[in-house]
Image 1: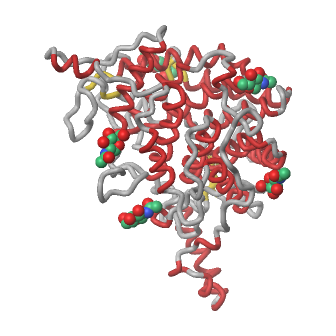
Image 2 (image 1 turned 45 degrees about the vertical axis):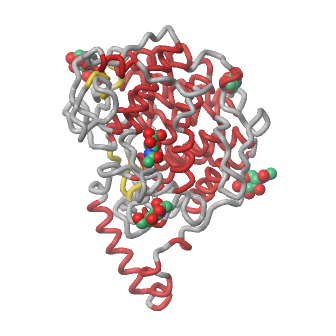
Image 3 (image 1 turned 90 degrees about the horizontal axis):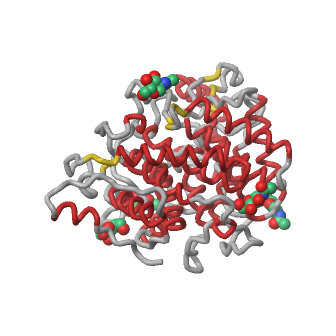
Length: 461
Ligand SMILES: *[C@@H]1O[C@H](CO)[C@@H](O)[C@H](O)[C@H]1NC(C)=O
Ligand SMILES: *[C@@H]1O[C@H](CO)[C@@H](O)[C@H](O)[C@H]1NC(C)=O
Ligand SMILES: *[C@@H]1O[C@H](CO)[C@@H](O)[C@H](O)[C@H]1NC(C)=O
Ligand SMILES: *[C@@H]1O[C@H](CO)[C@@H](O)[C@H](O)[C@H]1NC(C)=O
Ligand SMILES: *[C@@H]1O[C@H](CO)[C@@H](O)[C@H](O)[C@H]1NC(C)=O
């Protein structure tokens, strides 16, 4: 299918009236048209393909990881709508940001790059493999190999020395947050491991998914009622857990568990876990069938990152409904109701400094406000609304639209040895020679950094 014509907005302007987003959720064409309008507004925030700008980066105030999340959303946008308008820009961005080792660790991002940041780009690559998104030319990094590179590096960074295992939030000792272990970083590991297990059939990936799950439950980041908490510092062995519950943590583990359920042919162990997270997610986050980012949304305190989280919940609920079809009748009606509420928020006409899509189609943040546009706009809001709307195109038991694997038509080329060691990436100013010369001094520095990291991790977004 070719490009979708975006005529509704232009017509509205000609007629002198400002259009708000109109969607008939009983019509796939109408949903695709609405998704196209919202996607157009979203990509207007992107400047990375302008002359002199860097492909793959969003302008301030958006962090690098959110661009990875956005291009992951655009991979799915292409897959569900068939609209090819953004394939080139998505491919360019996803290849430009691979970094020297083809692992989504570009040197420019070293100062802030955490395991979760890297993971959102890796999950975009994994989606590209699963959706048979057009493969990069030969000689360029391939989608599957990119996801495998990040998996291999996660394995390398698994840290049994503190808290009995788990990934730290940050990769480098000098970044704030190195002494924090969190659910989203380990969620990225779990999600990617499960999907690689399904795609390749290689048991090693499934074993790691099990291992991450076991650690998450042992350390009680996932408790017996399937609440999923933010994380904890390593200083006291991850005993003092920071308890905010974010929609994206629920979503990323729900989806990974659903993939494991699928990969184990509907095994009872994973069925119970999927059921548990699903039940808790619905009870905890949904108010009248509309999700709320509880730690910040009611008090109007969500930051730029958090304003995008509900979109990932939508993505992973829809994906879970395919991998574990028994969840479809619970999850997809909620995606539908969320999409309808989100679409009603897409009625804003902020100034061009805030939004450059079609007038009357800027999407607000608080979906529970329905038609009362709340004035909060940006990449997170636009991407979340796009997600809710586009994932209503997921159908029950539509096997032809299920993510592929290497044995069901997947064409992406992998490399089980992709990736590099973290040590090889340390910036030269902090090269290992220092450590070798004065090992004692290095240890002191490490302690100092650990204190700083423990005190200030909350500042780094
Ligand atoms: C960048 O990509 C967007 C979205 O595809 C497109 O509208 C815009 O024209 C592109 N800009 C340049 C300079 O190519
Ligand atoms: C790193 O930054 C330089 C200078 O802004 C830019 O030219 C280059 O494309 C960037 N590389 C990546 C991978 O973002
Ligand atoms: C696994 O996913 C496929 C594709 O959606 C689905 O057809 C199949 O029924 C799922 N397997 C199980 C055990 O639910
Ligand atoms: C659910 O939404 C209603 C209406 O917006 C609000 O009054 C109520 O406080 C919400 N409930 C919870 C538990 O947040
Ligand atoms: C399975 O994955 C592991 C971990 O990357 C790798 O070492 C092994 O070679 C893979 N096995 C096959 C048969 O590809």
